[in-house]
Image (tube, rainbow, N blue to C red; front, top):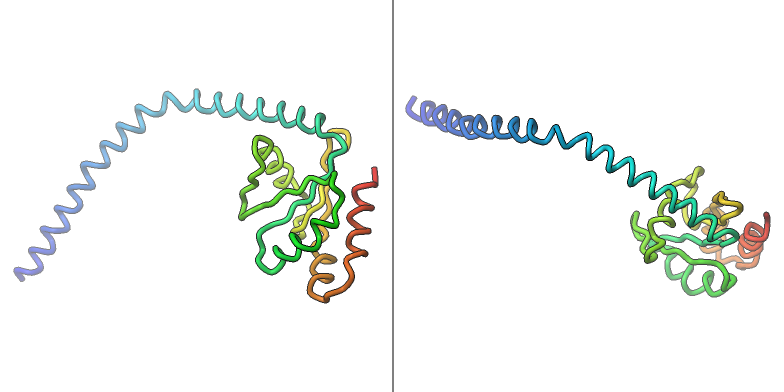
Length: 167
């Protein structure tokens, strides 16, 4: 019986600590509520500014071709050693690690382009900018078929070059 009373006393003490935190939380919430409209306005303005800069970036990069690949262990060495050297030097190569696109000051725009890919078929992705629009294509199936089957690279390169040359 004594143990039950000690356990009950401990539960009451634990809950008493929580009871002190609850009013502090509500005071914080009440003080923070007036800042919410300003945060929403700031977020809206930041988003509009980013969209404007992104549109300017697309206009500036018109005609640029991108090759996106990721850090998948089974294909990373093959892409770096075989495929990338065979690509045209004009193609911008973008490495994606997890969900991070680390490409300097333009990384946020490159990440947005990747994020807007409509058909998620898998890496590698081919993207190009034509008249302010991003056109995308996944060569995942053909790439892995060639890599795993140890087939010639030329059909994949033909497809990549055809995509980049098409208007």
